[in-house]
Structure formats: structure tokens, C-alpha cells
Length: 180
Image (cartoon, rainbow, N blue to C red; front, side, top):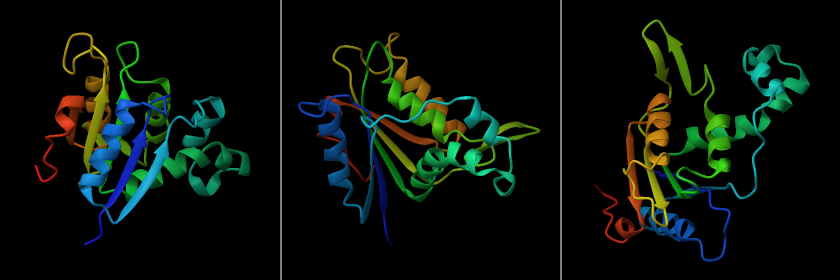
């Protein structure tokens, strides 16, 4: 059975980045058949009026400009949909994740695509994927009152239907059992 990993790095640093090293170690341990690589140091566009407006138009009715406005989002969503496991390496900057990680979240949170609104509230449209987030914090402990990253990501992934989310700090990665 084929296993695909979406490997996302959010650190602005390349050289000497702890979160990049950690996420790479996790991906290596997973032994995936296919790795889809997304480096958020290559910035993503922020949401704008054209993007938001285009999401409310059925795909078959979108103009070329509206389709273009969603093209990056469509690519990011497709990467997420293809993955069996998502591995994110991220630092904590100023008590939360880097802005580029929030931009990725905004691009993949798509009504009717990754979640839907029902009479019982929102429902995630993705499932059966494991998410592993390797966090380098330089002093903000995961789960501490100053950690705004992990609660945000846990809620976000749950919102799109991904409940199996593991957060690891630098000390956890070396001993992390992939089978767990």
C-alpha cells in the first residue's frame, strides 16, 4: 500500500533551523513512497477580496480571473487531499506560528472543499490522515499559557476533519515512535 507524506516547513530560516531538521527526521522515519514538499519560506499569497469572492462561485461558473485567484489554493488543497500523513515543521515566533503558516491555513480552509456548514454546524471533509507537527519554540513550552500555536492548529485541523494530531517539541522527536 502506497504512503504519501505532505512535508511542510514554515521556518524563515533554512540553515540551522531546528524545526526543519525535526520535520525532516520525522519524514525520514515514516519511509513514505511519495513525499510532497511545501516550503513556506516561499511565501503564499494572502487572502484578498478576489479570493474570497471566488470561493462563493461554483467552479464551473468562475471566470478565468476567479479561477486564477484560487489556483494556489487549489494546488495546496490537492496536496493535502493526496497525503496520508501531514508533517509540519514550525517554530514559534512571538507566541504563535509564522505568518506563512497562517497563510497556508487560510488557503486550505475552503467551504465546500475541506469543510462544509451543516444544520449541525461545521463538518470537516478530510479524514483518515495523521498530522504530526514538530515545534521548535526557543522557550515557549507546548501547552503553556503562552503557546497560541498548538491550540490554533488543533482546532483548525479538527475543523477540516483531521483529528489525529500530534505535537512534538525538539526533545520528543528523537524518541517518537512512528507506529504509535
